[in-house]
Length: 105
Image 1 (cartoon, rainbow, N blue to C red):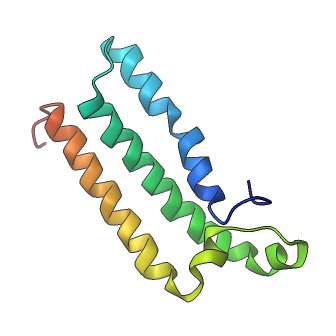
Image 2 (cartoon, rainbow, N blue to C red; image 1 turned 135 degrees about the horizontal axis):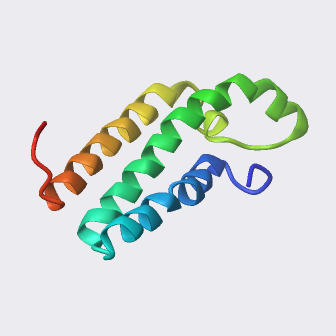
C-alpha cells in the first residue's frame, strides 16, 4: 500500500485487527456490532499510533525509493495526529466495554 497511498498504516490496521472480530465471534458465538465495531476501530487507531511512530524511522529511505506513509503525510503534525488516534482508541475501547457490560476492575 505504500506505493499507492499515504495511509498504509490504516490498511495495516484494517487487516491486522480483523482478529478482534473473528475472536469475539469465536468466543461469544455472536456478532454484536455495538461491541465489536468499537473494538475493531480501537485496534485500527492503535495500529495508526504505533506504526506511524515506527514509520518515522524510515522517512529518509521512503523518500529515496518513492513510497508513502502516514509519517510523511503528517510530517511535523505527527504528535497531534497520534494523540487524536490514541484518544480515539481509548474512547472506542471504553465504548466497547460499556456496550459489553464489562464492569470496572
